[in-house]
Amino acid sequence: MTTSVAPHVSRTKTVATQGKPGLSRKQREGWAAALFLAPDVIGLTVFVGIPMILSFVLSLFQVSGFGQYDFVGFGNYQRIFADPVFMSSLRTTLIYVFVLVPGGFVVSLLLALLVKQKLPGVGFFRTAYFLPFSISIVVVALIWRFMLDEQVGVVNQFLGWFGIPPQAWLGNPNLALGTAIAVTIWVQMGYYMVILLGGLQDIPLEYYEAARIDGASAWSNFRHITWPLLKPTSFFVLLTSTVAALTGAFDMIYVLTKGGPANSTNVLIFYIYQQAFQYGEYGYAAAIGTFLVVIMLICSTAIFLTTRGGRFSYGD
Image (cartoon, rainbow, N blue to C red; front, side, top):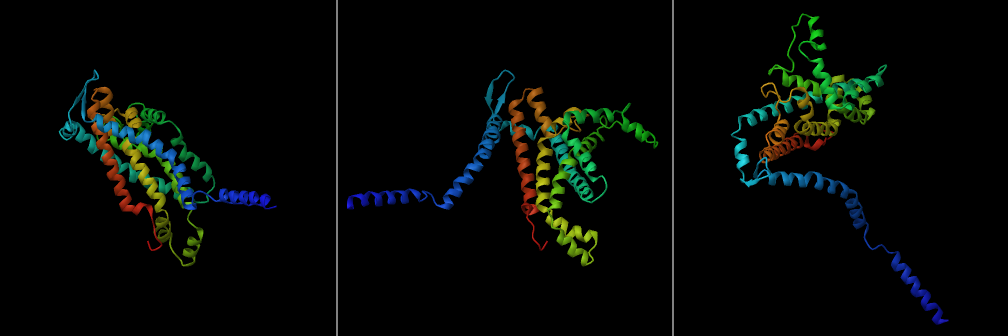
């Protein structure tokens, strides 16, 4: 009898021991978080981190068109600040970013506030505003280049009805950058409108009902309810649009103006392309690329600090 009970007790203890988890709950959650984050971390490391390191290493060399690498240390970085075309390109880039990002944000926010209203046909207008973003940038830029043609473009023909003489929108150095910014805002406004509209719809309606009972005006509603509660969405829009303006302007500029006229639209991302693939200056182009990353980090940090990372409090 005794010999038949002992194995049973032993198996019970073994099963009980196996039933206990090997890791604590906190450890299991840590492992789960690591597994969820692993694809992003691997992707960022392979496609962003390693290329950035290789680009920095390449910027320390003078690369000839025949594949010869000569170590020059920080010579390419010293060359940057003595290059008048680079300084002109840097100024153009800063103007491009500081006009495009706030301008695009304001236009997108106004559209989001408009299409949030319960108006007839609002679904059609939401789709119409978003439609340009769904089309290839190259196609959009080609259409606008034709529409903005000085001789046969429909824009000048339309303005001619009001007695305005034809303008070389893409051929005049004083107009080309502004025209490129306006076309870019037109393309992107629908995308950011959708994001801001989502943020607006997340704001509880009870706040507006309480404000209406208190007799608050529309401006007071926007100032004290909409704007503070929209800060997280605004932070996301400002951050992503800034990065897109610094690094994603190549397609539009290449098709519209190719950096001209007289380098008036030659932003840094296009100047990098020229140095690398037109002049074969891979090391110098890599140095400019590294400099552009530094600018992007400075802009991102400034947005984090000024918006407090998109956080808000009910005291705002």
